[in-house]
Image (cartoon, rainbow, N blue to C red):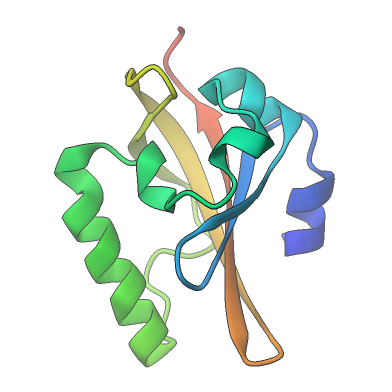
Amino acid sequence: MTMGDLRRETKLPAIIADERGVVVHVNKAFEDAFGWSLAEIAGKPLSVIIPEALRDSHHLGFSRFLSTGQPTLLGRPLTLMAVDKSGREFQCEHVIIAERSEGRWTFGATLRPLDAP
């Protein structure tokens, strides 16, 4: 999966963030599942969709990857909690990718909800 694939994804919720962890793109499936439109979430930190209890771990892993370039969780399905616009937490299967272009990292993920709303 590439960032281009994520931008074209229509069935699974998808999100893309820059190397600062700022959301730059979500698809319609994300908008439907999470309640945020692209206009509402673009420019916000990726942590808005991460439960409070998991944010420190997320920041640690994100920072470790940026400093080492060594992935530990990329490209494989992970079952993790996520948060929608209303604050509801639910399980999703995340598949996270990273791409480096022109010296900068971009991060993306599909987020398949596992819990019924």
